[in-house]
Amino acid sequence: MDQPIFQDLVPIPRVWQRMEAVERRLVEASVANTPFLTDIAQHLITAGGKRYRPLLTQVAAELGGDTGENSVEAGVAVELVHLGSLYHDDVIDEADARRGKSSVNTNWSNTIAILAGDFLLARASEVTAPLGEKAVTLIARTYAELCEGQVSELVYAHSLSHGVEGYYTVIGNKTASLIRTSARLGAMTGGADDDTIEAISEWAWEMGMVFQITDDVLDLVASAEFLGKPAGSDIGEGTFTLPVLLAASGPTGDEIRTLLDGGEYSQETIRRVIDLTVAGGYIDMVLDEAVDRIQKAEKAADRIPANPLTDVLYNLDQYLLDRVASARH
Image 1: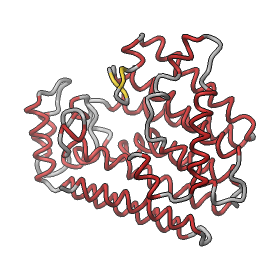
Image 2: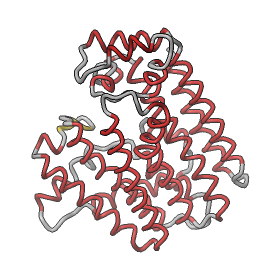
Image 3: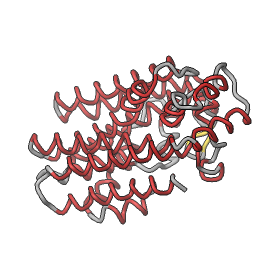
């Protein structure tokens, strides 16, 4: 996703005015007393990014009557949590690049990357504090969920034993939780009523799940040019996503389990696992589930009182449907 596409999907000028304010506040909020730490904390901010989470915050804020400074601060908070978690993820994954730039752990060190991530998370709490106790609790709980998801993924590495339910737990905590919080916090700070807050939260949860599910499918079937890395990188790292987990329980499961029994996988092994997964129809099965989840999201959106924003939610639903369709080819 990129902002030009988003601007077509979210044709609300005041949303984009607030997004400009979010960009300015991200820079301000990441300034430390130590210039060295400021440079590191702003390393990914200046690299750009989709800003999907703060955009959801601004969209959800439109459901209430207050779309002022508080919704901007909410957007800054969720993006700071996202950025801080990326610094930590890159250390865990030993990543050498992020958003077209060298990762912080590569440029400096793991220790510095961890401390900079902690600094951004602390700033997220500081930004959230004036929004009230409920907002602070929501941000804190969400980061705890992100940590739980990351730990679960590490525990499940190179293992098929956790199965489908374990997979849902990981992506729910690692991806969907912050996307849900982004929308929920926006609706809260925008002054939406309780029923609307619950409806947009359910919508965003399903959207977050679909976003990760389709990413995981694309890792298996998209070209290396599209991905910017070899297909099947998740398998190579010992992360077995939904299509592979389903295939491992199917008719060719014995071969797949044998291929994945161990800690290192050649490109030939990865290719064979992908081929068996595709041939068994598991890619289409998973994408069908993604469509079902989008329909659940639409039902949640239907509970929101009719207003111009509901068309925007359906636009975002359709974008994900198009993304699912592209993964089928």
